Image 1 (spheres, rainbow, N blue to C red):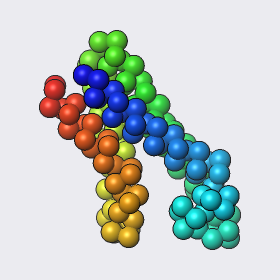
Image 2: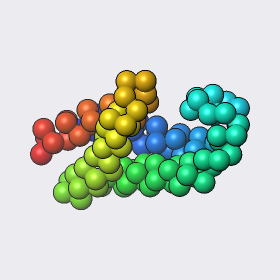
Image 3: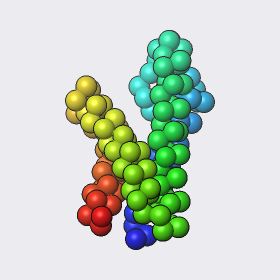
Image 4: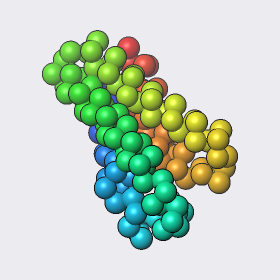
Length: 126
């Protein structure tokens, strides 16, 4: 089903963007504004953001591998990879929701909505 591939690719793309923001551009004015960081806070949290960015990149790579296996017809490994990577994205969004509350709702939805919908469709098919 093409919808699975598209939704998983969107989720992966979003997490690649998070990687770029957190691991490469963290201290730039534009990214500081997106994340509500002062220049001093961004300098202080740069190492944490770098690590978190790579975490997001690895989730995106897992989703990309799942998309590949899905599209070549290796459904069981695709479902396993997509469940792990997309499920981790949803889990991280729930951690954000329960730790930061509704003030971070935009981030929660951006991080977790597409992977959640994709997982629901994936599990419904299998």
